[in-house]
Image 1 (cartoon, rainbow, N blue to C red):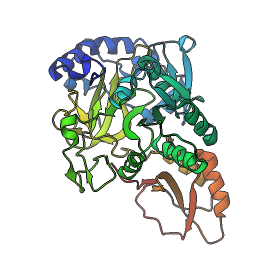
Image 2 (image 1 turned 90 degrees about the vertical axis):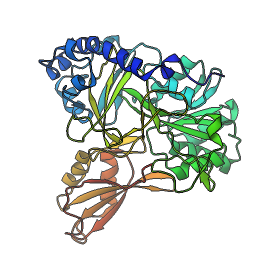
Image 3 (image 1 turned 60 degrees about the horizontal axis):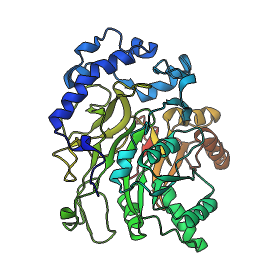
Image 4 (image 1 turned 45 degrees about the vertical axis):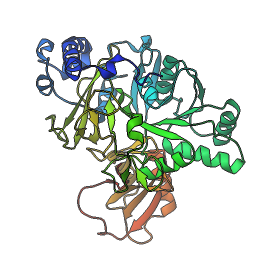
Length: 437
């Protein structure tokens, strides 16, 4: 069995760099045929952008700015080079942010992440990413087709039906959020249904803490994760250690971000995430477009080579850092440590973004409230959020506030009312207190 998806993954790093930056001027010129990119990159001569230093001089496009751009110039803020009526599908992510899907096979680059997770042609995959409006389900569906896999379009919810489908079709792999995989396994155990056919999982869109990875491993599922956003597809993905390293275990007390592998007293050193092919990743100082030194934590910025919906220096708002050296798996692209928090205060909770503007909207509905802080944590291996709100005793009911929080964010959360002056005066609206790694 081959260890790599294609020859691109093991090419000389210098050759990869030359190839990417030889193609970059044509990409930028193509992007600038779209009015949104022409305005954003006004004054840029594409022919001069042939190095990382030249790329770093271009302005960032913040993912958080897409909402306003798309309202001003629907449907895609003038950033699409393919008209909406020529797209394969027209998507809407929470925000809402709108994205087109083109006609290229494996358009989001998920297939190589699936391959690295051990999924092969002929496997049956249970896909629990949402298919309704949002792109997640289709991104993984397209990859399964490219790999030659059958797919069960489970989507989200309907847990009992999904367990029944798994027990009947006997899929060997799962794709979706790690939280929902645990929910499915728990539901199957409670119902006495055999879902042990699932041996591998590729997860994304939610945290995979070491404790959950270890629990899934104990239950027979080897779990890998990939880091992706709707606008760029897969940015980086976990890879397996070669056989020669499988038995080399390091004592618990592993470096930050190291994955748990066996749930026991000893765990493997981290491999990080290998950056996907056909994209350029930069790590920049938050609030600027200036690249930081390798190893320094900064914001992830991505440039893609999509002909239909190109992205040039899109700032994801996510934090990460470049890891030193090449991966022992044999892939030669740079590695990042994976998701290390947000450069802004936006948080992803159960696969959905929650923004400071949404917390402010809850506050506008209740003028009696003073400071608000949404605290995101983990509870029973699932994301959980609690809205801390300052108000005088009896001024607002917790139930009414919880109802408003769910209406605005589309997520359930607890409410904790505190006395005026209790919350810190530090400007923080969303506090993500989930463990990193």
